[in-house]
Length: 102
Image (cartoon, rainbow, N blue to C red; front, side, top):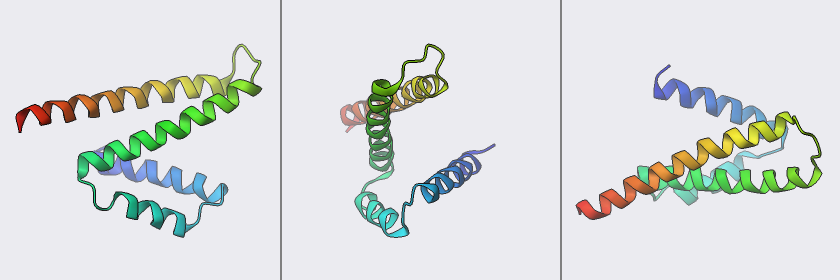
């Protein structure tokens, strides 16, 4: 699977979830305006940072309600946090390296 196919797959799954949670096209358009002026690196950082912020909020809310030792939601949250932190740290390193190159 190439990058475009992977993104298409992820967007499709996110579209389905957004529909279930009542996200409107207008809300998506508002967010597009937030990132439209950013370069590729800025858009990536914005998307990753926003997703991680939401994930942290979800994790905190779930932690308050969860009392299970083998919780699948907790396992999914741990995995998502690890992936998002790795991605953000990579973006941060690349941004810092570019700053020194200029």
